[in-house]
Image 1 (cartoon, rainbow, N blue to C red):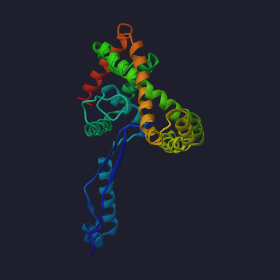
Image 2 (cartoon, one colour; image 1 turned 120 degrees about the horizontal axis):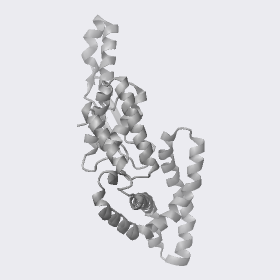
Image 3 (cartoon, rainbow, N blue to C red; image 1 turned 90 degrees about the horizontal axis):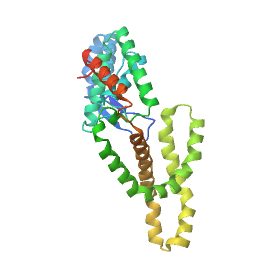
Image 4 (tube, rainbow, N blue to C red; image 1 turned 45 degrees about the vertical axis):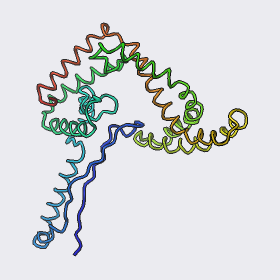
Length: 285
C-alpha cells in the first residue's frame, strides 16, 4: 500500500495589501494518514474526529491564531507598539522574520487567555494612543529614540539626492501609467486584500506595453543605440522599484523633519506606560 501523508502549510503575511511586505510560509510535520487505518476500521467516527483535531492543531501552530476575531486590531497594535511582531512597518530590524512570526504567535496565544475586561481596557488605551500618534504624524522610531534624529535625516536626505534621477525616470515610465490603473482596480475589487497583487501584475503588463513606443522614440531621437535602449527597457522594473522606495523614504523624511520631541513628550510617556501594562500582564517580555 502507498503511504498517504499530508502537510499543513501556513501562509503568514505582515500585510497582504501592502506592496513588498513580508511573507513567511511554514510547514508542519507530515501527518501519515495510514497510521489511522486500524483505528478507523474499529471506530470510523472517533478516528475521523481525532484526525480532524490533529489537522486543526497543526494548522493553528503554523499561523497566528486568535480565538476571538475581534481581538485582531488589539493584536496588531501590540505588535506595532512593541516592534517585535509581524507588523509591516513598525518592527525592529535586528529581529529576524521567523522570530517576529514566533513572537506574533506567542502574543496571540497569550491574548487568548486574557479576560475580556482587561483586553477591552488595553484596546481602548492603544486605540487612543495610535489615534493621537497618527494625528501628529509621528515616525515611530523617533517617538522613543529621538537622539538619532539628525543622523537619520542626514542618511535619508543623502539617499534621496543620490537616487532622485532614477526616481524621475520611474515616475515617468512606471508611476504615471499606474495612477489610472490604481483607481480602476480599487473600484473593481471591493476587498483591499487583492489590490496589491492585482496592481503589481497589471501594472507590470501595462508598463511593458506602453513603454515600447516610448523607448522607440527615445532611441530614435536621444539615445540612438539599440542595445542601450534594450537594456534600458529591460531595467524598467528595477527603476520602478527604486522609484517606489524613493517615494516611501521621502515621506518618512518629511515625517522626521516635522517631528518635535519636546512637543510630543506626552505621547512618549503614554507609550512607555502602555509597554509597562503589556509587561505586567505578560503579553510581551
